[in-house]
Length: 173
Image (cartoon, rainbow, N blue to C red):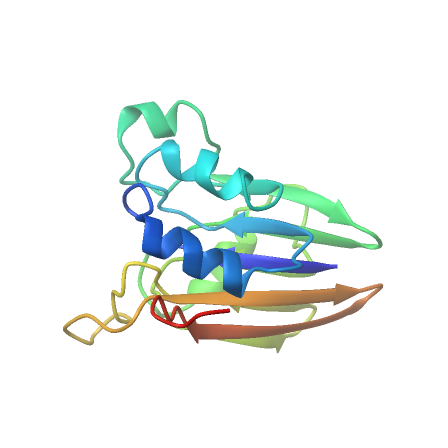
């Protein structure tokens, strides 16, 4: 199974962003959005590309927070995937994220907070962060960079990911 993953859209997607996502997410089985979504129209736009799961962040507009959970966990074959934006200080951040899942630590945790592209196994959990779609840099850095997305690959119990893929809006497929 291949997931297209993004976080930090903040607002409806432009036609150029939608076209770039269509190219980057061509052939994905589903899309995971790790918040903040910014506007419910984003979900409609993503669902036109592939089935979509999304969570909200702590700073969403009320209409988004009323429609989306802050976290969700679901089964993908033998694995549990956790999806959460998260927030907080970098120290012990991954442990804090895991503690938010009352049903137990997921084997895969997709998150959006801190916007640091990550694909890394830590103990029993594979942590995945696609980077920021709006171009925000990881905590402690200033300025904007090119929008980023990621691809998450799951086959049985094997997990791998490609985070921080620059969203090239000018390329032609």
